Image 1: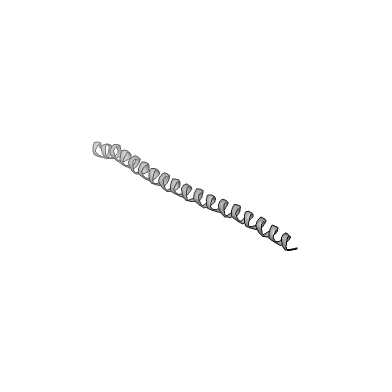
Image 2: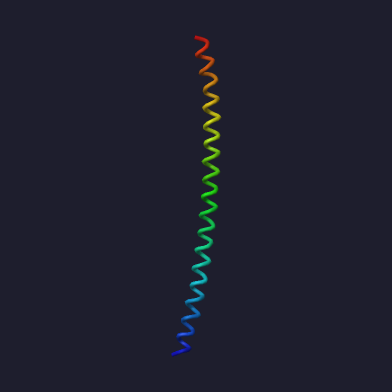
Length: 66
């Protein structure tokens, strides 16, 4: 009986190690994806700002022409 408990404990420890490793990898991927998303949002914001500036110039030229 004691050997069976020892075997089960070792199996449980091995499973726990696997689960903890998988959890760590999942958290690592989530952090990387959040960073990628943050960079993409920043890039989109910069692009939108540049486009707004580009549209202001022709509007200003049209306004002064009339």
